Structure formats: structure tokens, C-alpha cells
Length: 260
Ligand code: COA
Image 1: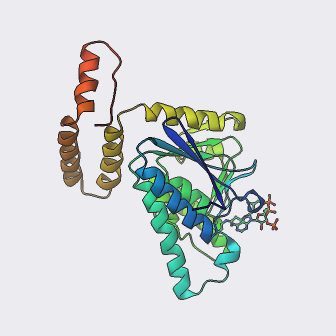
Image 2 (image 1 turned 90 degrees about the vertical axis):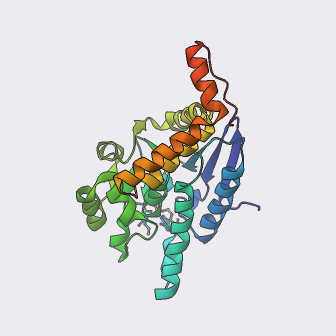
Image 3 (image 1 turned 120 degrees about the horizontal axis):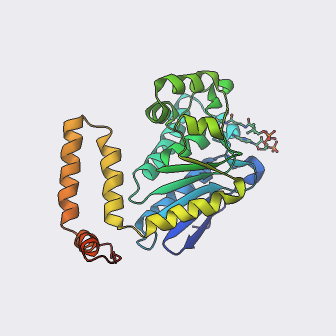
């Protein structure tokens, strides 16, 4: 597929995906969502890629939302389908077998904040701004914002942001637990790539099971979630990488993980 709205760069062990509509502040139109799904599916299936960095092109925006010119045309039926499509792609990202790191370089509004929340790690630059301004357009978030925001930062602050449509800065996002790190704009991509490199050197099956345990376990009662963790712990004990990791520790050497 020839990409019109995304850039994909493969590096040693990880990939960088850049949303590339800078003249529209990287707003997500239908094509961008379609391309994002296709690219993420390919990267998920590519064993040479152990982590993905997701960012926005240009100086100003990560993603300034879903494309408002497309939303304006929706009716009751197409609107629901519009939301379901974006939700499905974002859920796919959230359930990927490898970590996706959002490097939030500017505005992460509406669908941009929702996209970032579907990623597994979020870091941002001091210039980043977050918000769910849909209410200002007579809308509500449709790509998971009403669900992921309260799960990530709690109901009190989520409802405040959803109902006021207020934009918050990087430090407030950090205080709320929306991002795990704030760095200078010039350092953002480098830091995200460092994280991707660190993760790409970890045993991939362990990373996959951690993502699965957290994603599925958070939606289960605690005892069922602990059973899932134990089941995955059993499975990981049958891997070569587990034998290698534990042996290397005891033999005081660096482990050589093979992804088996
Ligand atoms: N959908 C479609 N186009 C968008 C967009 C969006 N979500 N966000 C920005 N754009 C477009 C603008 O229409 C403008 O296009 P134009 O140059 O053809 O007129 C271009 O991107 C630049 O945006 P502009 O508003 O001129 O930049 P700014 O620096 O003055 O303001 C924002 C930046 C982010 C505050 C402002 O663009 C904004 O409020 N965007 C919408 C945010 C939003 O409500 N998102 C949720 C959507 S559901």
C-alpha cells in the first residue's frame, strides 16, 4: 500500500510511524485511520520490529483530532460507523503484541489524545497540549476517550476535562498520570527511540505476555486476572528465553535472548 498520510521508518529492532498531515495539524481523516491500521498490522506481524514509536510531523501537533470536516458530514448511522472504525483501529494498537510508544510533540486533542491513550507508553515534549475538546463542537469523543481517560486518570479529572473541553499542558498531563515523562522538544524523539531500543533488547515473548496480562487483566475481576497472570507465568517458564535469562543471571553474564 502506497502511504499518503503516514511515514514509516524501520530501524534496528524498532519502527517509527509518523502521522504526516502537518498542514492540517495531523488531523486523522478516514485515509489516515485506514493507513494506520494497515501499517500497524504489518509491524505487528514483523518479528524484526520489537517496539513502535508513534509521533506527529511538524513542530506543532502530534494529532489535533479527528478531521472535523469529515465529522461534519456524518449522520446517525454513518456517525456510529465512523466511531466504530476508529475505535477498532485504536483497540488494535492497544492489543498489539509489542509496545507502542507515543512521542507527543505538540497538540494531542480529541482523537489525538485518544490515539495517545491507546499506546502503551506516553512521553511528551514541554510543548505538548492535551484535551478532549469535542464538547466545544457539540460532540463527544468517539474513539475511546470517554472510556480510556477515566481509566487512566480517574473519573474526577476525566469528567472535568471531558465536560469543560479544557486544554492542559505537559506538566499537568504528567501530574495527572497521562504521560510518564516530559522532555525538551529537541530531545523527544531521541528519548522515545532510546526507550524503543531498550525494549527491543528485552525478550519479546515476555513483553507480549506483560501487555496481554495488563490489557486483559484490567478488564477482569482480580481472581480471574491473577489466574491469567499465573497461566502466562507458566507459559513463559516453558520458553528458551526464560532459561537463558535466569541462567545468565546466575552465571553473571549478559543474556542472549532469541525470542523463543
Ligand atoms: N480537523 C480538521 N482540520 C484541522 C483540525 C481538525 N481536528 N485541527 C486543525 N485543523 C486544520 C485547520 O482547519 C487549519 O486548516 P487550514 O489552514 O486549511 O485552515 C490547519 O489545521 C491549522 O490549524 P489552525 O486552527 O489554523 O491552527 P492554530 O495554531 O490557530 O490552532 C488548534 C491550533 C489545535 C488550537 C486548532 O487547530 C484547533 O482547535 N483544532 C481543533 C481541535 C479539536 O477540536 N479537535 C477535536 C476534533 S473532534
